[in-house]
Amino acid sequence: MINVENVTYMYPGQQREVLTAINLIIKSAEIVAVLGHNGSGKSTLAQLLNGLVVPLNGQVLVDDLNTRAESSIWQVRSKVGLILQNPDNQLVAHTVEDDVAFGPENLGVAAAEIKQRVSAALASVEMSDYLNWPPSRLSGGQKQRVAIAGILAMQPKYLVLDEATAMLDPKGRKELLNITLKLRSEGIGVVMITHHMSEAALADRVVVLYEGKIAAMGTPQEILSDVNQLRLYGLEAPPIQQVVFKLRQAGMDIPRTIMHASELVEALC
Ligand SMILES: Nc1ncnc2c1ncn2[C@@H]1O[C@H](COP(=O)(O)OP(=O)(O)OP(=O)(O)O)[C@@H](O)[C@H]1O
Ligand SMILES: [Mg+2]
Image 1 (tube, rainbow, N blue to C red):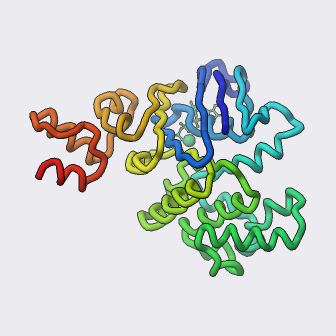
Image 2 (image 1 turned 180 degrees about the vertical axis):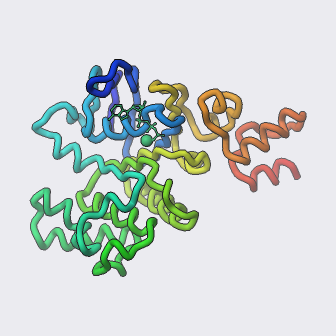
Image 3 (image 1 turned 120 degrees about the horizontal axis):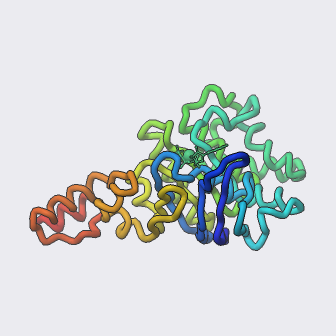
């Protein structure tokens, strides 16, 4: 597991803590969604999880490896893959195959094994047909999937998606979410930072960051149905939760924790 223990962080030269007393555990085979207003500290948290930045106070342990220890930092980075928002910034090679091979090559994996890993990773994100394509000819969603394949080829245990769907069209977003669910079923722990509240509904747990602190943590049902509280954190509940909230305010006796349109239809009927 990734264990974030009482972590505080301040950027060098700054006076203000951007994260304060963060305690969080990420386990294998779970999806944890992280929500929060702009500047609440989500991307900083993402970088703390794979050791790109190290805590000012407290510690981050990745399968017991302290991200502060320089001797194990490459192990930490290959265990915790990070996918960023802009698909164009993440692919480095001239073909999809070379791009996915880049990570394991840097880890010193033998050539024959790299070939196997590349083909398994591309199969996993359903991009096997694009092996010889130049990344520049792929759609945004396909680029993100290739970037994920590049991480899978390093055999990570955790994947951190920092608004990885933000620049994708609805189809690309849906495909990426399906891949995320599949990776969870294969045992990977996923941290999904998102502005899309409906994506948080797919998670096992939801964490809300507000001004650098964990303001709320719970199941999607608990967190997303708390429409007024979310508003105080600068977030809008998904449409279904807002409708449920208004219907309940109007006196209808329906469960607060309805998550999907089909459940709402059933409750109303
Ligand atoms: N390199 C940096 N140096 C100084 N301050 C920074 C740096 N990066 C981020 N910050 C500040 O840290 C705070 C948290 O930023 P962070 O990027 O973690 O927020 P975020 O929740 O990811 O925001 P967004 O939703 O806009 O992506 C912000 O106030 C930001 O201005
Ligand atoms: Mg961010």
